[in-house]
Image 1 (spheres, rainbow over the protein chains, first blue to last red):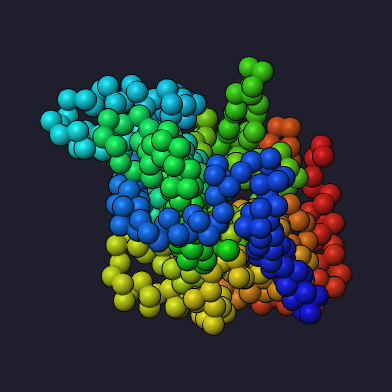
Image 2: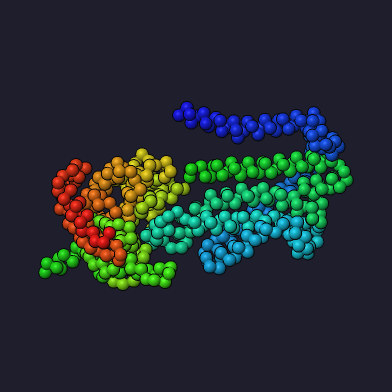
Amino acid sequence: MSAKMNSKRRSAVQSVLLPVAFGGVLITAWQTGLLHKLLNTDEYVLPYPTRILTIISENTDKIMENVWASLEVALLGLLFGSVIGYLIAVFAASFRKLGSGGLTIVSSFNAIPIVALAPVIINWTKDVSPQADVRSMVAKIVIVTIVCMASMSVNAYRGLTELPAFSQDLMKTYGAGKLTEFRKLRLPNSIPYIFTALRVSVPVSIISALVSEYFAEYVIGVGRQIRENILIAQYSTAWAYILVACVIGIAMYAILIAAEAIVLKKRR
Amino acid sequence: MLETTENRNVEIMLDNVGMTYDAADGKKVQALTSVTMDIHKGEFISLLGPSGCGKTTLLRIIADLLQPTSGKVLIGGETPREARLKRRYGMVFQSATLYDWRTVIKNIELPLEITHESKSERRERAIKMLDLVGLSEFANHYPRQLSGGMQQRVGIARALVLQPEILLMDEPFSALDEFTREKLHIDLLKIWRKTNKTIIFVTHNISESVFLSDKVCVLSPHPGRLSAVIDIDLPRPRSMEIRDTPEFTALVSKVRNSFEGV
């Protein structure tokens, strides 16, 4: 019992204390200029942490406006991509012969770099609205949707088809039809796989939202601000947006992990 | 005259049942050849044999999970498919096959959800079944929180909750340790006595089959066939101690000697 407690405490030390200590050392080195010496750079290209925080506090409204724009793209793209990906998986699981081929095509979307995908999608969606902000938003959401769709469809397909031994036989012994089998067995069996997909697609949705902003016609979003500020050599402001982007990514991943812990608690 | 009264008691009739698989190399594999036997209402029958003898194949044919390539099966005068759709049998598998996202009681309620029983009816019947297998305190536990033996008892409760006449059991205790298995043997016999089900029990354990059954059907491999049917005339109710009697030992060796070509 006490040995178990000890090992639990040790793993808590390893998983929480060590990263925090490392972060502390890094920030101290950064703030004291030691990091600049090590990286052979100056405080203009790599501003001190206090300077970055000052910029954030002075520009809160503008930064938040861009945060919401990026979050909207990431979350809507994540939502649409996940729903469409899951529906593709359901289709593929229902028509196995046709489905597994279709799934290969969908998952190959994952291999297309966003940099290559973005100009094509922006070109496709250039006529959806007379307003630049709307058509840019649509283009960005479509890009995130495509990227998120692949991981969901592949993982959900596994969850819908890789069933525990005899569980399908059991359904058959109750004379259950396909729909009942789906509702009572395949759907609940796929839920842990949905989280596996989201662990990939949540970070990817943010990255692809930020990158898609680079190519969009309308200038808005955290990713676009990083680029614009670097172009005009406003490195402190660029770093402020980089920090905000990190916080968004970490926060969304943390929310996902918390949700997963709640939903799957009973299964473990 | 005698034959007709006996026929009325026949629950499951196997007539020349055979099963041939197409192997990967194009050859035909005879998993089962011409099995003929009658199983009577309320009987406890074991299908005993080494792996490859076709005992599980035979059970799955009765359950309509496999279609025989020859012969005929009748369950209470109906085809296995009709019997399955009318839920005339309950099945217990090698692993408990509980759905890990459902609590114990919700697992037992699953078949009743499929037959659209009301919520209160489901709960009432599931509680009765939990009581029967002695797991009332574990209703709201999740399967992972139970031992292997307890999980398998939940599997039995779930198989009985639709009140089928027949219980099909496919090596249900083979993954359990000896102590748990012996305890479950006693529990299973108690449940059988209380419910009067016809039980077909697949096993590769000779002493298990002798201890539980009225009749041991010995299957031999290559090709899978019924090589002997041995009546077990040990008195009931049976307790653990019966295993130490000379009668029990004699029956075990009689069963062992009836295998062919192993």
